[in-house]
Length: 110
Image (cartoon, rainbow, N blue to C red):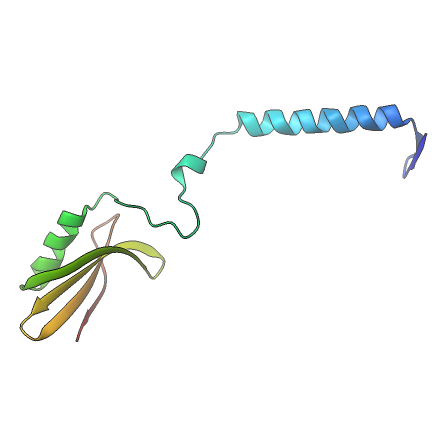
């Protein structure tokens, strides 16, 4: 016998209840739709989105004519973006293109 808030209970009853609870939880988890495959790991940078590297470069070149010197994946203001650096004369333009929408998230020149 084991003392519980409800009084004395046979140990076998507690063991059976615990096993049943574990089984129910396992069944519920197995029945739930899995989204783990769709969610990147913390800190992971997803390779592509609807906006490809090439399309992001085209979008950036619509804003600034020049020579593309770098295109890379990045995160800007919590959004997955393409970082596109373009040299125009003596100026480097940094353009951040949202990988989902193609929207310009940020633009700088130095």
